[in-house]
Amino acid sequence: MSRLFAVTVCVLALSSNVLSGCGSSPSLPQPNSVGTSIRAESGPVAPRVRNLVYVSDQLQKAVLAFPAGERAKNPPPVQTLNLDVIPEGVWVDRNGVLYVGLFAQSPSQVAEVEEFRPGASSPFLTITKGIGEPSFLLVDQKGTLYVDQTHDLSVEVLEYPAGKTAPSTTLAITEKGEGVGGGMTVDAKGNLYIHTSFLDNEPSHVYRFAPGETTPQDLHLNGLGLTTGLTGDGSGNLYVSDAKGGISVYAAGQTSPSREILPPSNGYFDDFVATRGGKLYVAQGEGGSAASLLEYAAGGTQPVNVLSGYLQAPLVPALRAAAF
Image (cartoon, rainbow, N blue to C red; front, side):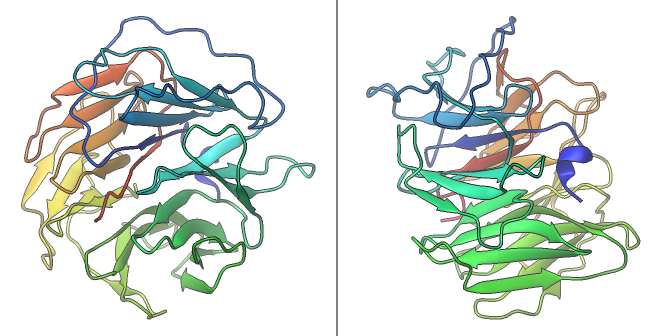
């Protein structure tokens, strides 16, 4: 089951190791006309722009890049890649390569993952083999691409070595009922973590795959709910969406959270990413709350910055080199 039909979607990716903040804007611009391919209507990234926030938007069917930082003050996008299909997972690796997972909505469309060099309007690599519903993407420090998707009733993660278009490994998680894949992260030891939810085995679970292993280990984290957000920082902390609609933070090796970040009263947190130093970026826009990207300082429980005015339905954030 694609999470496109479970929630309203938009995907963001931050293209620097540490972004210092985002401004806000009260107005919502009209979306650009939708092109016939991801190569239609796009422009180069401004050469002076160093830190970028990439946002894929379901309603606009586009990936937009915005300057990021305290001085950005919520500017208009510096690049737009128009789509004829809805993007799901998005990631930006340590070299600035943008990865976009595209979901086939009709028999005439092909599900795929496309890779774009910084500022490019056409992909230099397209992956279709094994791709069905590329809900979440992750690239580790070796350049291995992980694609999280639902296959039949299982949640599977496909591993693609750097530059390859066929998966070398398939990791699978099977429980009771149909599975829904969620966020992924890797730690300094190369362990892969994935948050999943199964319709007949609630609440959700966070699993770990040790390097080279194909058998998942349930971490048995306390306080989880139905949503599947997950990220990690450089200290080994896991940030996990919880039963209260917020984010619980688990120190390495612990099953009970050390602290919790609560959402606004009219929303809940499901998709977010942390920097190595523990800054947190949260996509907000579900449960009736305004569409925005919230920034939290390391250890903070209240947002210190808000990016708003151009987003319509945020979903998955991804930070360049987030886990390294």
